[in-house]
Image 1: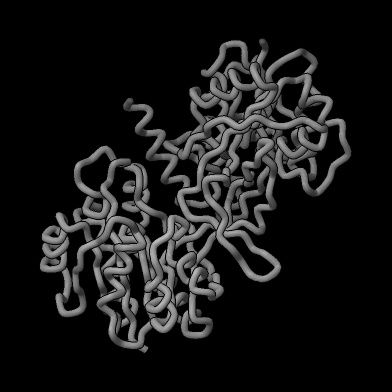
Image 2: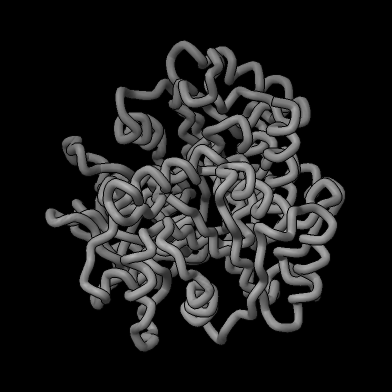
Length: 225
Length: 225
């Protein structure tokens, strides 16, 4: 089946103390977004990318594409006021039956393994949400204070959140609600369950300067391997 | 008030694919445990350390102390079959009223700031459990599948879990139960609530080779600062 990755890169980068949004920061001389896009393109030859960027960074995104990639496989579109609206803008451009990956642009340590695992599961179950276990114990705040919760039943959610187009396209016709923190919650509001798959510990969001160093280390290791 | 840090270093290091337990692996030429111990000793001049090690690594621990530290401030004792039993062994050596920090030996990025924050809160509230927010969305497994849970009410637990000796010493006279995954759960079984304080994102457990690289980066930065 066709594959489309909606790569959402809407963040303004305030946590990095830098004017440049974190998806444009450099790792080994190339922008964070380069690595994200490159891994999706490598995963499948028939995968196309819809890159959703804040209006004011569309030209910066175009420069990355021009410098590194086959422009025919990548389209840029403008983001909206929330992640939901940004994803919605990307999904509007999908007109063929496909498996749709929705991915955080700043998760640049994504691997082709994880992309393929999500694809296979989405083919079989209609959806694939990558999750990892918490390495730390977990507590939940209650009205009376806080209490432990078995960390074996707690899952930390990553992307690419992956769906059959026949599920995610109609699901995103819904009106926005604050509880839509990711695509899985939208699909659930549409009335469907989501299927979890194993994520990867290294598949972090780049949000702090030290994350860039971490990513640099991992990506240098991959090159040697 | 007197301060005692019970530093628990019982892990066997299987996730690192190395024979040496991870608390003895080197960062910039010094063992992980060196950094952990050093930060506690720096935090307060009247803080003493009880280092709990697997029987077979006591001599390795002694070598670290002899090489780097004032031996009068550090005692080593043997660990038990679980974390609970290891902590219990350490606590048995405390005979003065004090604030007791129980800390994972492999959390070597602990800062004096965090230690002091825990101390102040434990003085005021009797306990201080450092926690951080999840950067990722969170789901909880249910009998029917899985569902989102508001990540604002989910807290990931770190150490040092810090208590007044009048709380933790009697609490640990209890019989072991499987649900005792940390010291907070023991104190709760004793009938008391625990107080949460802000932890630190960098205060990770060293469990994978890439964590060592991360720690190296952070610790090198601290030296320059």
